Amino acid sequence: MYHLIVVACLASSPDICEPRLLPAAVSDTEQNCLMRGPDIANDWFARHVEVAPQGKLNCVATKELPMLEVKEIASDSFVHLGLAEQLSLQNQGRIANLSFVIGEKSVAVIDAGGTRAEGEALLATIRQKTALPISHVILTHMHPDHIFGTEVFIEAGATVVANARLPDALALRAASWKESIPAQIGARAMLGTHLPTIDQKISAPTVIDLGDRRLTLTPIATAHTDNDLTVFDENEHILFSGDLIFQGLTPTIDGSLTGWLDWLKQGAPQPEIALIVPGHGPVQDSWTAAIAPEEHYFTALRDTVSALVGKGIALSRAVPQTVSTLQPQAGAWVDFDATTARNAAAAYSELEWQ
Ligand SMILES: [Zn+2]
Image 1 (cartoon, rainbow, N blue to C red):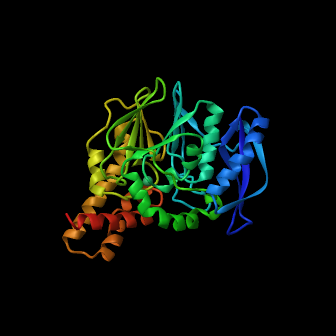
Image 2: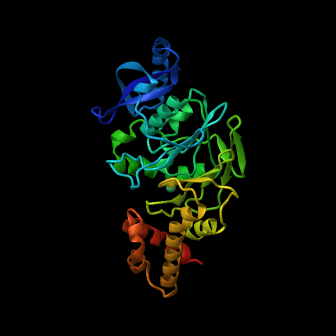
């Protein structure tokens, strides 16, 4: 397969340029790709007015594209492990775990990456494994590190599937993320990144069939966010939990601490789980081991913040006191102090009203 590559430069800073992969021009031969290229590039730049084309377009073979490192965790199930870090200029937003499952007829992507560039690298990785169409991009929740790579899959023909509450949650945050995310990961890393629209909104368990490969999508009550969704691979018994499960990186509460604890305490969501792919951290083979660090952390957080609220301690004092009380757990988590301070503030506002 041959893939169209254009060079796009930021209109506001013309010295910041990056190659972009435009999947709509994918062709069996270089010549066909080059023939279709100009119209597709014109159309793309018309929809991405913040960038301008530079130089000639180019068509390259799949093996020449930048790839992500992936591991085949079960038959036709692949996972790219993100870095266990918060967003930074160095990691360019590449911190979330990204997966894809290949059926007899098509491919589903589960989380699309933190930028257009990471989504392109994921697409190139999939193309190295299979030429089947990518029918679905499933978003486990709204956070930028999971969804900012989606648009390239839309251009490749995929249907975007998410919790029915995701579009409203995204609309609320889109304007602030447009400023804050480039500040954290850099304008170059973000170049050409547009937020996705959702085609299929899930409000009850739904099965997607990729051809002898069934995925069950389940929307979850407010926990990590108000728009979490899990994916269960019925063939290989893999639970893709999204950020309902963190390992390594300190979990961030952007929904409800008590809701999240309720989800953890209700037990394994499927009777037979062979593997669990968390949103951040290594793949797990035991439900109990997968959730233990998080349950321990959230229980201590809830008990500590509840006690401080009960004693009438003000938020400004409760936050540092909580970080200090939870210190014995700090060794188990990356970015513990800063994230725990934010979680303590979120927990305080939630528990204050209970
Ligand atoms: Zn998240």
